[in-house]
Structures are given as structure tokens and as C-alpha cells.
Length: 161
Ligand SMILES: Cc1cc2nc3c(=O)[nH]c(=O)nc-3n(C[C@H](O)[C@H](O)[C@H](O)COP(=O)(O)OP(=O)(O)OC[C@H]3O[C@@H](n4cnc5c(N)ncnc54)[C@H](O)[C@@H]3O)c2cc1C
Image 1 (cartoon, helix red, strand yellow):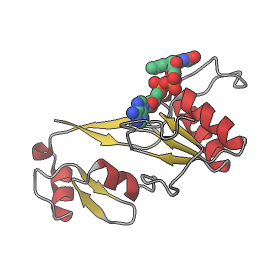
Image 2 (tube, protein in one colour):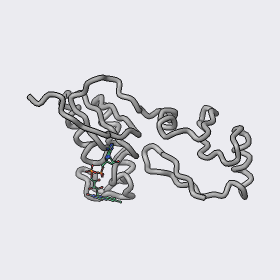
Image 3 (cartoon, protein in one colour):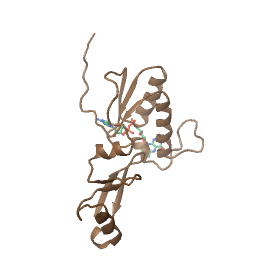
Image 4 (cartoon, helix red, strand yellow):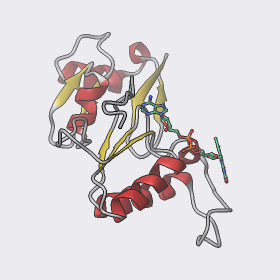
């Protein structure tokens, strides 16, 4: 049976195995003190075991930011695809306090590409994952806050003046 795991800096990692016929998996599940059918099971490098964590809990444990630290931002960006990443870097580099929200995984569609050949200043191309990683380094250097996984569910105008 395939299982999908949220995986930062990539998309979803799909693992295909049958826990009943795989003794190593059975052992791991039993060592973690989880029930046979408790999947998703995540073992962190600290040794902590998370049995069926929700996506937000898992993201927090992996060091991802899921809550905004400020009540107000000058620039809010929905989506961390190519457009969002560029907007975040340009906005924040102009001094705007910037928040970017991504519901799935970094990099948007381009993040799934094994090789992007037409991105400016990368004459031999680069992978979508590499592009997303570089973009987050650059955005964070300008103080952009990136919330993931979080979904924007509404946008409204508070002051129409
Ligand atoms: C496999 C592949 C290879 C590609 N290769 C190339 C290439 O080599 N060269 C090229 O020029 N183009 C390429 N493209 C096209 C390129 O990826 C897209 O044109 C580009 O990603 C569009 O960027 P975008 O930011 O507008 O949208 P997207 O990349 O679609 O990003 C939108 C992001 O917003 C997030 N989002 C949407 N709604 C919400 C919400 N409500 N709350 C929070 N987050 C939300 C989504 O999860 C997504 O991450 C490729 C596309 C694919 C799929």
C-alpha cells in the first residue's frame, strides 16, 4: 500500500511497502510502541517518534515555520512558486515586511522539474529543488517569513481608502 509523506524542499515522498510482509517495518513499528496499523510513523533524528502526526505537527517538528510572528505585514504572498519567490525577494529587499504562505511544498510547479534550462543567470540550468532552495536562502536573508504548510483561505480589504 503506498503512503505519502510531506517532505520539505521536495514534494511528497511516496513509500510503497507492505508492512505485514516486511519484518524490518514490523520491528520498527513495534519498537516505536505503535500499533500495527499506525502509519504514518516518523522517527526523528533526535529519536523522538511521532505516530500519525498531522501535517502541521510534522512540519513544526522538522523545523518549518507554521505561524506568523507579526500581526501585520506590508506584503503578503500566497504561494511559493516561481512568481511568489521572486515577489518575496523583490518586496523584502525594498524593505517591506513580507509573509509568504505555501500550502504544499516549496517551489511550486517548477520545484518538481529535474532541470530548468531557461532560468536567467544559470547558463547550464539547475534543478527545481535547487532553485527552490536558493530562493528560500535569498528570501530569508531579506527577512521574509515563510509559513508552510499553511493555506490562505480568504483575502479581504480592510481599508478601501
Ligand atoms: C515538471 C515541470 C517542469 C517545468 N519546467 C519549466 C522550465 O524548465 N522552464 C519554465 O520556464 N517553466 C517550466 N515549468 C513551468 C513553470 O513551473 C511555471 O510556469 C511556474 O511554476 C509558474 O509559477 P507560479 O508561481 O505562477 O505558479 P506555481 O508554480 O503553480 O506556484 C503556485 C504555488 O501556490 C501555492 N498555492 C496555491 N494556492 C494557495 C493557497 N490558497 N494557499 C497557499 N498556497 C497556495 C501552490 O501550492 C503552489 O506552490 C515547468 C512546470 C512543470 C510542472
